[in-house]
Length: 163
Image 1 (cartoon, rainbow, N blue to C red):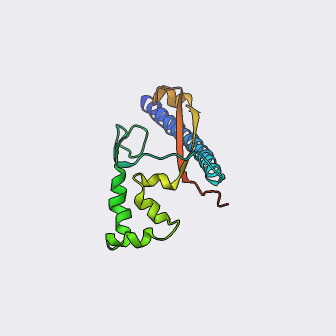
Image 2 (image 1 turned 90 degrees about the vertical axis):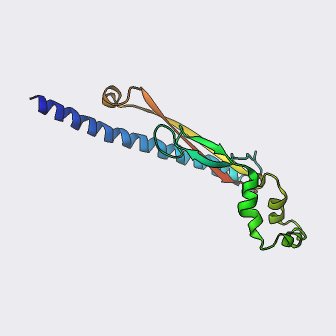
């Protein structure tokens, strides 16, 4: 009888866990779509408050052992690394920049001359969060909280009114 009860509780937890994962996945999808919609609308606008996302050099996993989650620590990077790793390597010889800089309204020159080149992309963000109530079985047997908040953040480049 005891083995049956333990097995029944285990099956109940597995079933409730599956239902909870479905509700969390649905909330994450809705939040992601809403954040994407907000960022997309802002990027298509004729003008917008452009932000500069942080340069991230390295992500240190937090206690949950998953990269790019809320408990991770980001090591900031230097904008000069973008210059040395990508922009400066777009020419075979540094003297070629004088030829490129001579072309009027050249976006490559703007990137090369800017100390914070990522600001030229004009990133706009969209954010949303959803609160998911926990199933009583999960709340009492697995995770002692009333709800879990799912947060999403999306960055898109400003299209400068292209559309």
